[in-house]
Structures are given as structure tokens and as C-alpha cells.
Length: 148
Image 1: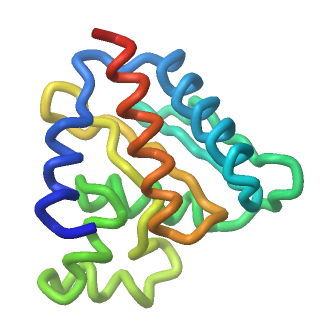
Image 2 (image 1 turned 90 degrees about the horizontal axis):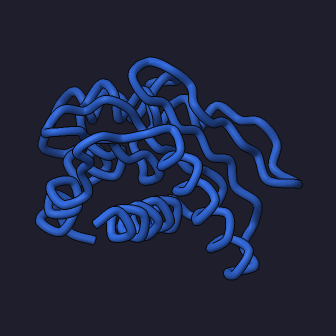
């Protein structure tokens, strides 16, 4: 994953109007993909307009701070948490977040963008951080494709 590809994802994966039902559909697709991979269980957290619309832990997944940390990273940066990972050496604030107990400078958090504005975050935690990111992106692509 390079910086250009990541910015293209953020530009492409935007909603005219995000609904809670879309969030649920994205989460269901993430769960299905994890089961197909026979991967470790994941946690999923979706927040939209300051409202928690979904917090789900697959069987075998324990609560951890990573979902909240990824959410905070997305909301504070206005980008995916993977963006902060890739740009940590370029942006002093992101570099500081590497040692912050409130942020997660790694993949697995992606912004909900409506009409160019970040209105929430979709976060996955439990697999390798690039895989967490990939699960979100693929699931968002599928849901957006089904809308049009």
C-alpha cells in the first residue's frame, strides 16, 4: 500500500448520504470475509455523527482499546488510521501519536466521508493492521457499488 493508492481510496470511498443500515451491511461483509479467511476474530466499531451505531465483537474476540484508538485517530486526522501510519515520518503530530495511549498509528480505521466531510469512522481490529484496513476497504467498495 502506498500513499497515492491510499489517498485514492479516501477520494473514491465516499457517500452521498451514509445510513446506519449501510454501516450494518459493511460490518456484515467484514464478518463474512473474516470467516472465509478463517482468520482470528475481529471487533468492529462504527461511529457516525457522534453516535455509536455498531460495536460488535466476534465470538472469541475480547474487548480492547484498539477500536476506540483507531476511531480517535480517524476523527482527529480526518484520514484513515493507515494514512497516519504512512505519513508518521512526515507529520510531527502523527509521530507523537505513536506513543499516545489514545491514538493508533496503524491500519484498521477508515473515515466515513459524506460530500467531502468526515462524519464518522469504521474501525476493525483483530488481524494484522493492513488486513484490518483491507477488510474495511473491500466491504465499503461492495456496499457503495450496490448503491449505484
